Amino acid sequence: MKNYLIIGASAGIGRQLAQQLSTQHAVMGTYYMHETSHPSITYQYYDVMDNEVLQNIPDSLDGVAYCPGSITLKPFSRLKEQEFIDDYKLQVGGAIKVIQQCLPALKKAANPSIVLFSTVAVQTGFNFHSIVSSSKGAIEGLTKALAAEFAPKIRVNCIAPSITQTTLAGNLLSSDEKIKANAERHPLKRIGQPNDIANLAEFLMTDQSNWITGQIINVDGGMSAIK
Image (cartoon, rainbow, N blue to C red):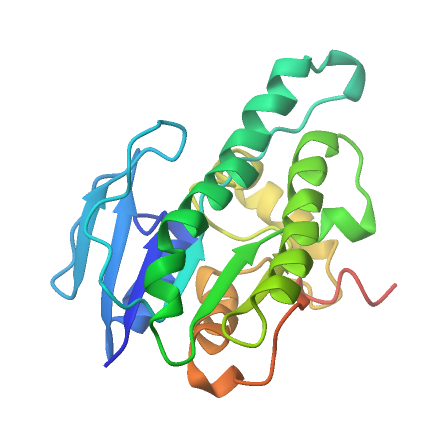
């Protein structure tokens, strides 16, 4: 049995990933807005934007997934500098803080793994995505840098999904018409579900992916590869 930490495990992809891992491993998850419980997961409150220290990190930690995110879609001309800064603090600064706090425990594990999350919009380019693409672009760069620095001890990979049916994307998928319209933009003609992304995240966090590091992997219904 391994020890895993999922930051943002109370909703969406993070919750799905935590539940899947908890069937065979010890899982600690954090929540912020969505307090939750699960019989097989140890939950704690944690605000990644605060200066508080993450509590109850196991002495040895086999994997960390950083799942918090935001989706701010506006024309570039209407955006304020502070909006970019706040988003960067959440998506990049929070990941950095968590990884630094967990690094001693990760180094004690036999084959530790870190999984981060980007978006298909970074490499594809969409209107009104300048904030999220900027932050997630930084995450992709961080993934490559840490994979090089932590090799061969700790593997670091990143998943770049397209739109997924989660609370985070609720405003974009708030009606059957919106769901259908978004589905039609993908070659596979459906939007993603949390398990579509969590399945790959689980694979990357376990020993099944022993020879994979430094990768940005798209899970996007074909959007980034097929026209």
